[in-house]
Each structure stands twice: as structure tokens, then as C-alpha cells.
Length: 437
Image (cartoon, rainbow, N blue to C red):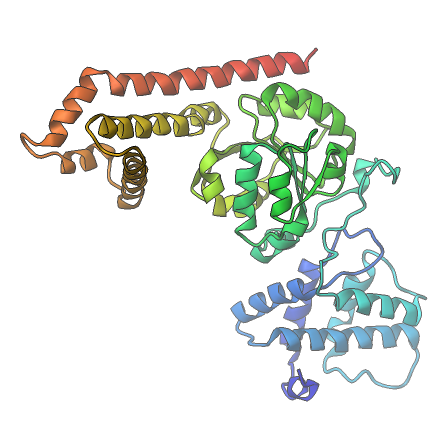
């Protein structure tokens, strides 16, 4: 863009003050790599906030204004006694804010031109953002001090466009991990920002086909991720968490999708102050039609739950609730998917018995389940109301329903949900007992 078009529109003092306050709020308070990082994404966030406040500037205009302010700051540092005036209106009113932004985390006094060039290079990077490249507690770094690892300012982390910059890892490469992965990739997250680990290569190929990096090292996944999904069988959770525990820091969000493994067990196995969330998805996440329920641990903030929701919203329905509901959700929706498949199979076999070709019967049965589900969801009506709308006095449907009731389908289905829920609770008790051994 031609800079002359940017320069023509003068900034008043109040607008500049607001712009700097926004940048100060969005700035990398916890960035410990010795540089300031302001990439294109941050300026987009600032642009939205400026627009909401009634100031209509383009992203390029914000960048240009920032460069002028930064140049003025460095000029003051290099030549504090220079008689040459700073050619920015009202500089004295926001000089202190600039100093707070530029020096509060890594003083630049005496750094001179070298510091300015390093800052400039970092800010102009629009490639893979450096925002989330905290020091990693990897085995070869020797950095295992949790107190030096921090989260980004939540106001950056929670911006929708920041989803694409988060590093996400999966320990376990089963169907549930694959379903969640496909849902996440349908949002803003790029395959380059995901990594999956599994002890064997059997299930890793399908992740590689999506462009996702794979490994056999769980520690490698933790070291390179901000959000880690633990997607292994319940009895393996204690083993996995014991393995990765020393590498989990305060910057991580650990999300367990293991049935029955309680938040208390997770927090017992993880380091103190770890952020843990328990999630129960279901298989239709693969086609972005899942039903997911999560519960936050004692140290997980509301913002952590909102972040998880923003990552998973393309997977289907995402709800938060108390942990007591998770096992019920397992019976209702996690296992309930299989109950629906059994009913669809029975529908098709009934049609086959009556003379319909096999393939056609299964095709119509699946479409019937799909259509009925969408109508139930989208209409907002109670299932009983929709059922009554299909029935006509003396018609075919009421005869069929009578047969189903004689067979105890309602009671059997309720019992199936109850049994699956109780089994989830049993698994939780076994997992808790195993973690204490």
C-alpha cells in the first residue's frame, strides 16, 4: 500500500491514546524470548477494537502509526538531549505509555539501533506467528521450572483469529482423536499446528494424510503443544500422565477424553496448578455432528472453557456442565451412538425381511435416522410431539409403535443408558484406585 495515502489522515491525541492502550492491553506480557511480537493478527484485533470505538482506520494505517510511534521512542532513547522536536502531535501525552509498552518486559535502554531492527523484523513477520513460542520444557532444554512458563494474555488467546496460532497435541490416535481432529481442522486451525502421538504406526497414517505431524513420543507432543488432548483408554491414563507430568507447565491445558477418569484423578496425577478439563465427545465429531460435554477442573478458568469451546465448535454441539453429568453424557451420547446404529440396523433388516434389497434398505434407514434427528434438533419440539404428528388414527405408524412398546423398546433404551452410565462410573473408580497405587 502507498504510504502517502496513510499519512494524509491525521491522528488526534485521543485516538492515539486509545490505540496505545489497546496495544498495551494486547501486548505480550509474558513473552520471555527477549523480543516484542506484534504480527498481523494482533493489529487485526486492534483494528476491530478501534472500529468499535468509532475510529475507522485500516490495519495498514494502524501498522504505519505504530512504526512512527516506535521510531519516536527510539529517537528519544538514542538522543535524549536532542533539541530536535519529535514530530508527532501530543507525544508528551503518550510517551509514558510507549515506555510502558516497550520497556516493562525487557528494558531497551542502551540497546540502540540493534534492538530496533530486531523488533522490526519480529513485528513484520506474518508467517507462522511467534506469539505462542514460549520456552518449552523439553528434555534437551533443561528447562523444567514451571514458574517461568506462563499463558498468553487471555485477551489475545481468546480472540477467534488466535485459534489458528495455538499448538494442539493429541496423545492417542484412535477414532475419538481422529474425529476431534477433523472437527478442529474445519475451523481456523492449520494442520501444521497439530501433532499426534501413538505407540504404533497403525492409526497414524490417516492423520498424516491430513498433513498432521506424527510421533511415537508423548513427551514431544506435550513440549510442542499448548492444548493437549489425552485420548487413550481409561486404564492407560495414569501411565500416560506419569510419563508427561514433569513436562506439563502452567501454560498447558490438559483435556482428557477418557471415559470415567475423574477430574480429581487428573489433578492428582498432574503437577500442582495444572489446568485440567474433562471432555466427553462422541464419534459423529468425524462429520462435525458430534455432541460434546466438558467439565472444568478446579484450576481451569472460565476463559479456558471458552477457549476449548472455540476450538471444538466445528465438531458439533459443545456444552459445559458439572462433572456429575459427564458419565451420564457417556451413556446418553457416547454410547448412545451405538444404540442408534443398532436401531438403524434393525430398521433395515425389517425392510429386508419384507422384501427390499439390502443396500437400499440400509440407505433408507440411515437417511431416516438422519432426517428424524435433524428435524428433532431444528424444530425444538419434544420427541413425543413429533411422534404424535406422524401417527394417524388407525394408521401404520401406531401399529408399529404398539409392537415396539410390546417389545419393551422404551424401557430397554432407558436401561441401556443407565447401564452405560454406571459402567463409566465404575471405570472412574478403577482409574482413581489405580492412580493411588
